[in-house]
Length: 350
Image (cartoon, rainbow, N blue to C red):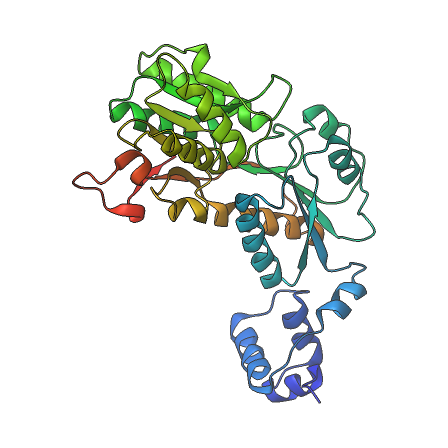
């Protein structure tokens, strides 16, 4: 039989109420007493019944992470980090895929899972500020990504404009002058695409380079095939680009494959930069230079802020935080030139 709270209290020489406060976090306990109780817990091998604890508080112990694409490695990596963070805080994280469908996002925003989960982390791409401001459901909510900002909910994302400007600045520093952007969308579509395109254009302007319409390619989606199709179109131009900045790593990887198939050398003929720093890009040949969001920080902040909201501690106004990013310089821009140190070379930005 496992250890009980009473046996822990006897071993630590404290009251049952004190042990309960330490285990359940009901009230602050003096640090020396807390250490004594924790030592007794460790010695007796006590494991709390998290399900029973959540039920006593009228909760399920489940939180949801709703993302647009389960198959996108960026979201898979982010989800894995969020799962670990939730577990460390005594919660189980469940996944929801919206498939970037506005009705699904609206349903989740409206509380379609309120009786199943205690809170929701949502990465919206088809709904905007108007829909979020119209929300009436009281389920704790944290927003991640660039779909919505300036709303009365916690929001965590990178600065996409700054990240895109950094990517263009890197390419310009390498002497590239005909820089293309793959992954543009219509004005009413993904906010992240609009922000990255804005940063791309700002980077060109800062370098005194023209914004050539033929070098901005709209894509249907954001996968490898889209990048490949777009790159073939760019390479068919009379004056093809000497560099490409892609909306994400998947588009960048597809673009690189199309370039190689067409007999182009990377980075000698065309340099390529992506965003997301997914594992696949690190092991591609050539390896992919990429803007690297701090995924661990995004996952940690989103889960902790949501749990704070669920448990009501401490009461704080919603905050809008931009997590840092770095640029991992690899072979798709640096090649094998002298001084290149492979995937470990990182320029700190933001």
